[in-house]
Amino acid sequence: MLFPLTLLLITTGELPDIADATHGEINVDETGEVKFESNKWNGRIVEQNENSVEMEVHIPANCAIGEWSFCVDTRTLVDGKKTKTFRYEHPDNFIILLNPWCKGNRSFQ
Image (cartoon, rainbow, N blue to C red):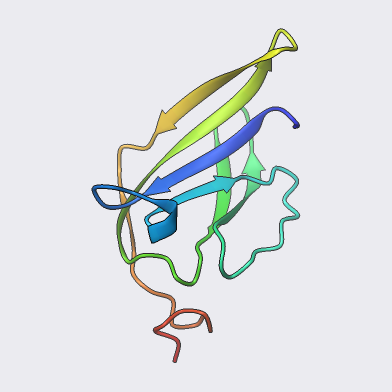
């Protein structure tokens, strides 16, 4: 495992569950070379500097419609042995509606 490792945790509803497509975990690709898959959560770092990171996130075609929240976990190696996790919980939610341009989405035109 390479460090640091960045993970986005995305949830909606009262009991988020991966099986119900109401919970997503995205291992963020830090090389920027990820190939997005239509049925999976994917993410990559587009740009970063000392104080900010710009990410691109791809949602699965069967993603639940609704209001979502997210947090960012960054894991780093401490003393060459243990990992330490730093968590940022974003204060605002975002809304996923539909994607009529994606063939895998039920709203595809």
